[in-house]
Length: 250
Image (cartoon, rainbow, N blue to C red; front, top):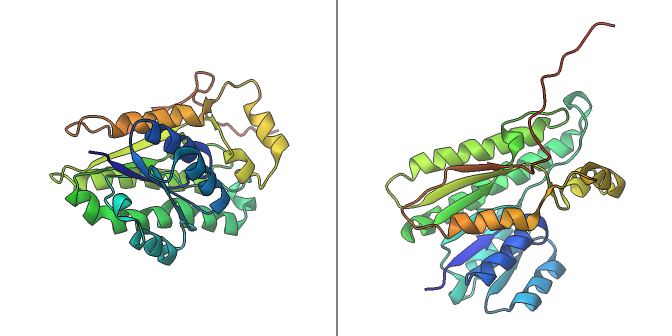
């Protein structure tokens, strides 16, 4: 039987790579995102029988519910939710951060994620499905400028554990995947389009790729239904843990 995955944030990065890998593995995919032209390109590349585009802003609960209510019959039974849509905005320390950047991260990384998850839980329970939430190493390891972003990803990781506990006995699997440095459009978004900053961050670092993370998502999704991976934390070999900061008197 062909299974169906709903993958949010499918217009770039981890999401787009996951759509391609899931289709190659025989899944149907509902691909969501704000950029209709990129969703259309995925459909053209992979086929309308395998990919259904659902264009909406993940923060718009009404648009999300409307899009899911209009799914074609062959895509209506969702077996896997991949909560991938998310972003970081701004690199300034908390005392100089833009409050709107914080609100955007909270609305996208937390509020939208829990809203979609809550909406799909009855169906996922009925189908004994799975939830894969994309968190970050920032959930565990703080760094200067990480402030609200790290807080939102800590929520995602803890929410995943809470879901796992609440869904005990239902057969629904829940996993948090926590990547470190991966080269996508992430830094471009975070810096509001600063290509030089993105190039500088990744130069010579041999970061992970979107395809690397998509492969982990697919691996978890294809595990036997009696196995649950609680969390995966992964980094490129070139990245490890920062030391403690010490402020010294001059």
